[in-house]
Length: 176
Image 1 (cartoon, rainbow, N blue to C red):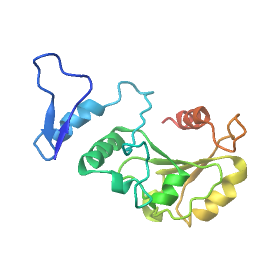
Image 2 (image 1 turned 30 degrees about the vertical axis):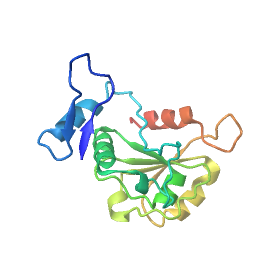
Image 3 (image 1 turned 90 degrees about the vertical axis):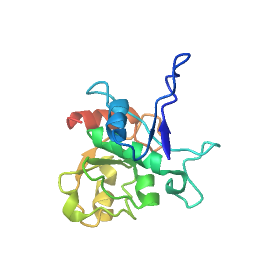
Image 4 (image 1 turned 45 degrees about the vertical axis):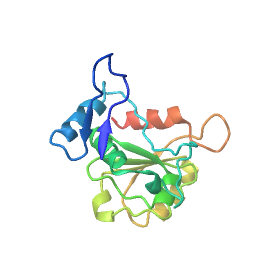
């Protein structure tokens, strides 16, 4: 399987930069491509089908992902200060902690049922961002996995969701 960089488009007469997934130097090449340009950089990464769906036939993103997608995501996560996911992803994908990078879970309800957080590995590596009224439910559904609960107000849109800026501000308040 090969990885090719499509953007920016190579200049006329130049070949696209492409590597084999297991070629020597591929990991370093990906690290150079995905290294954040500044300390306050926020990156969004996901896999979607041609019709824009982020959920595959199996009810998760796993059936949409290839080995290349997983390699790139792994590099992005290792370069990040924190991996941020929503509670819906935690529930649908039966989430585990990333190997090296802390995980932050944003939830307006506190419902984290279905996770697979290892209580021994979670210490100091799991943040749950939720409104104060969801704190007890988050603690109950963590099943003993140690997490720091960070209070984040519901968004101004009154749609029952956390505000994106509020979530980012809370993470920055934790030095992330």
